[in-house]
Image 1 (cartoon, helix red, strand yellow):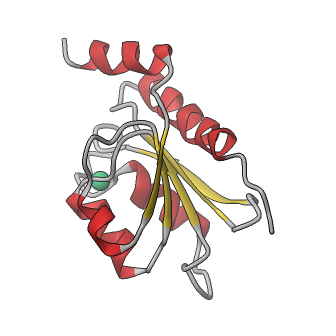
Image 2 (image 1 turned 90 degrees about the horizontal axis):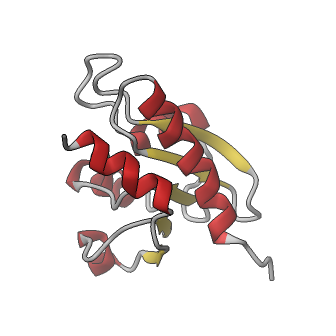
Length: 133
Ligand SMILES: [Zn+2]
């Protein structure tokens, strides 16, 4: 059995969120990994940068990962709990493991998705607060 360090997967997503913030965008990042932890693709929310409301961190990472034969063993890491749109993507492609920084409640829990939650690093909280000003 492969032992995955989920927190290290989240570091990639946090890195993308940090890049997004430096670009003047919304600091949300995501990444997709094989079941062994190999990075398939990463991305960030670029709604502001690209003036595209559909470009969420999760969808960007999903697109950058390219087409996969199956998504059931794919792990998604994201810095913010997936919205309805991204939860739909997770359900549509049957991704069964999602690692998040923040999620008090998420609708995908109803559908047998394993959700691993970690506390948001302090710098990320500061970034999100900065956005709300
Ligand atoms: Zn979303």
